[in-house]
Amino acid sequence: MVQPLFTQAADVFRRHLDKYDWSDQSPSRRHILQAFLRLATANGFNSVSMRMIAREVDIKAPSIYAHFPEGRDEIVAESLRWHFHRFGIAILEAVDQSESPEASWDAMVRVHLTRQLRLPESNLWDLLVATDKMVHNLPADVRTEADQWVDLYERMYRAAAADMGIESPDETVRIVMALLESASRWSAWNGDDKELPRLADRAVALTRSILDLAR
Image 1 (cartoon, one colour):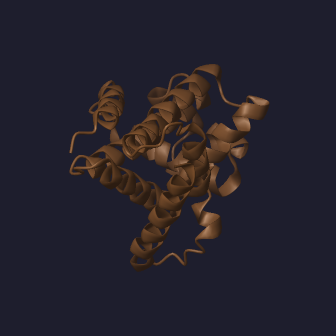
Image 2 (cartoon, rainbow, N blue to C red):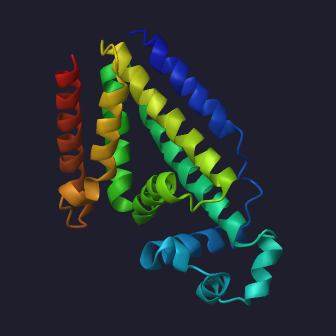
C-alpha cells in the first residue's frame, strides 16, 4: 500500500539522522555521556557538575575537557543528540518493514512505549524539553536542536494519521505524545521485560482509540 505522506516524513527524518556521524565517538566520550545521563537521571539535570562526572568515570575533572573542550554545555548537547539519534534509528528500523500506515503507526507506538519504560533518560529529556518551554534552562542551540528532533518525529505520526484518513491530526498527535511520554506513570510497569509486549499492545490500542475519536 502506498503511503506517500508517511514515506516523505520518514525520508526527511532519515536524512536528518544521516547528518550525524558517530564513527569518531571514542569509548571515553561515550563513557562520559553515559555517566552524565546516569547522574542527571538520578540527581536532576541541574545538579550534575563536571566534578561529579569526573568522579563517576574515575578521572580528574580537567581531563574531561580533553574530550569535551566546551565543557558541560557540550556534554548536554551531545547527550541529547546521542539519545535522539538512537531513538530515531530504532523508530526507522521498526517502520522499514511496515506496509501500511496502520502498521507504521503501531510500530512507532511500540518502540516509543518500550524505550520510554526501559530507558530512564527518556523521561529526563522529555521533562527537560517541556520545562525549557517555560523557563529556558537549555542552551539556545540545544533548544533549537531539540525542537527540530521533536518536530521531525511528530511529523511522522501526523503523516501516518493523515494517510489513515485523519484530516487534522495535529491535536491528535499531541495527545498521543502526551500519552506515550507519561507511560511510566500509567503503565505501572514492574521492570520485567516480559511485560513490555503486553504494555505495548495496550499503548497501541489506546492510541488507536484516540485516532478513532478524531475521525
